[in-house]
Image (tube, rainbow, N blue to C red; front, side):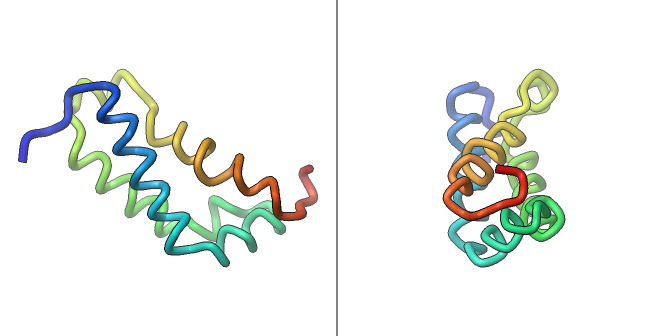
Length: 88
């Protein structure tokens, strides 16, 4: 498999992987948002997704972007605003 070098493809791949984390862990996400512990509760799934992403993306893209971290915020945290939380 060729590593992804196209920036837009890399961004989409990050969002897709993080979307899978959300789809497979909705209760953990809810718990994490409500207790302000999203990254702790989903640590294993987030890191597994990061490893998958890193294995698919060319090193020069990984070094010059933070698409996976952006996807965590955009796909996991922002939509989580529908859950009650101490932080909002």
